Image (cartoon, rainbow, N blue to C red; front, side, top):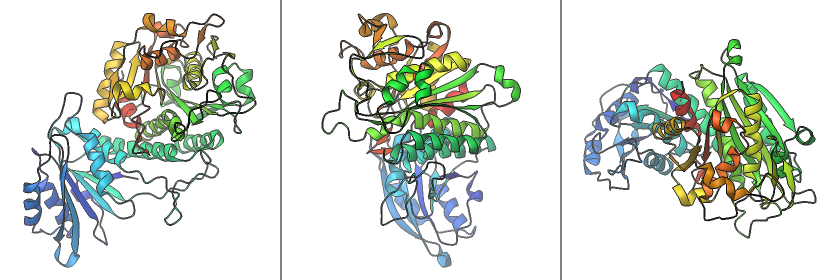
Length: 513
């Protein structure tokens, strides 16, 4: 995985020269940082970097596009170093940040090899606000954890989910300023979580089913010394989880609700928790409301919410920074399959909240499993905050696009903190209207407490989908703090997982009282 080091002096000793990718801005051109890195590679001896200085001076990034140049620098007897110098785009809107994290990720994807040593060196303005998001952007730009090509070293191929072998990348990240121990540990832990998330999201559904996802969760619990609770198969039905069970009962692998719990101290078990609830639909055919031709491709990504929150849970526990409250992650795992046992449109299920739902669209399944997940959190996890995350709606892409997840919250302060956490981490989010009085009516049913899909698809689909989940919070909707994150489009870029959500949750946890 990506390794962050405190400063240039902490870079490893390389037998063979690594590639060097130096990223700066028009205001912070990174020339001095390039000189320091090359001198370190040259056994701490000075290097003639006139060619680097010239290349940097000729960079001319556009308002919306980065500029880069590839050159070779002689290090004398050490050999010739392959160096890329880059300059980030110049225009920064108020919805972006000085770090320009998406541009950093794009430069990393274009210039960082997954088979050889690479140093990524970053020189950015205003270190306090750019270091974390830039560091996260590097990790998100590297997608090498899953590879099933026959002609290359395979990595991340899932067999039983318990002993998945991963080929680690060889990327080291250094900044133009020294990182303190806390930031260093946080970035390295966040990268670990991001790469776990990316690997799971990129895995094909014939490998990552509900059973192997459960095994991956068990492996994570063992690594982290976390408690784990599993309710699976017919036990879900027996205990009233009509949403998860109804969605997943037709699949070859049974549905499951999986809860990982971390308690910083034994005494913390009585303190209100942060509860993360993730949609884990390992494949979504649409069920009997079958997706039309071509629309099913890519539905392996429909577990991106659960994967992102499992990665966030691991990152938080590894970093050791969130010690004020218990932390739980609830994974709502199911495959929305077609078969004799599949839920039918017109079926009525009773969810864990006790509310009954008339199913009028089996392809609106994510909200059903999340309804059970948040109800479980309310009843059993003593939540101070509930955050659910899901690849929930196509409407999210229409509302906020590929770069911004949509958020919906019943609490203004929590909404503000989540938006700020998005900017701090580079996992951008944008708020949607939370107005139950306008959206609850969309789910009105003559025969049950509600339907699962709206009557008017032109009426704020993202808010409505989130409201369905809120309908299963019970009194907590008005007395507690809840935020919903719909990240259907930011979950991937170019069909490759981004690891979205891990950085967002780390920054949000850091901001909570």
